[in-house]
Structure formats: structure tokens, C-alpha cells
Image (cartoon, rainbow, N blue to C red):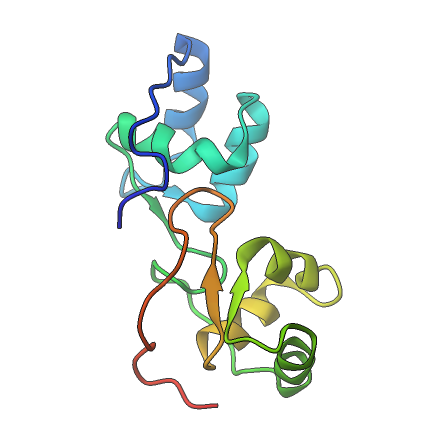
Length: 141
């Protein structure tokens, strides 16, 4: 998956690079959740994190909404699913809107609902993707 802004060039300080590298997991990847925290710590916009990590040879993993990675999820929450379908009336919902929805419950519950339904995520806040094309395999509404 290529990032939105592959062509951007970032000149991070040694301190900024140190912060990025000290937040990697045991597989030398940066989780979605930690990428947000790192962006804040190194004072860059979250949307630039995909391009920044790519320039450092690092992959972002474990999307909290289940688009990529290998997080474990719960069952779909029907109440949240119905609210999302009613509010957005579309199959694709921007990442930012789903994180906003999570403030009413939890990121785990919203992510589980997205992962186990026909809802698709668009416009990753970290810049990992704009649209996720195609149907998710194994999902049932």
C-alpha cells in the first residue's frame, strides 16, 4: 500500500528520528496508535506519518479500524453499525469520522464493527491510503 504523499521529503532531526525508532514494535514496525502519538511528539501532522515512516524504511501496522495489520477484533456492534449507516448513508466512511464516533464508545468497538461489516474506511488520517478499493473478504452485514 503506498502512502498518499510518497513524493514528500522530510528532513527529520536526529531527535525526531530517535523518537520514531524507539516507538517501534518487536517487528520494527510502528502501530497505528503509536504513529499518532509519535506525530504529536515530533511535532508533525498525523497525515504525514506514512510518508515519514516510508522514508525511514518503516511500515505502519495494526490499523485500529482493521484495514491492515493483525489486531484482534470483537464482534460487530449492531447499534454502532446502524448508527453509522444512518449517519453516513455510504459504505465508505473517512477514518477521522470513525475515530470521532469512537469517542462515544471505544476505538476497539468501532474498529470491530468496521472490520466485521460492509463499512469501508477512506482517507486514513496517517496518510496510508485514500480509499480502500474492493469488497472485504468474509464480511457479512
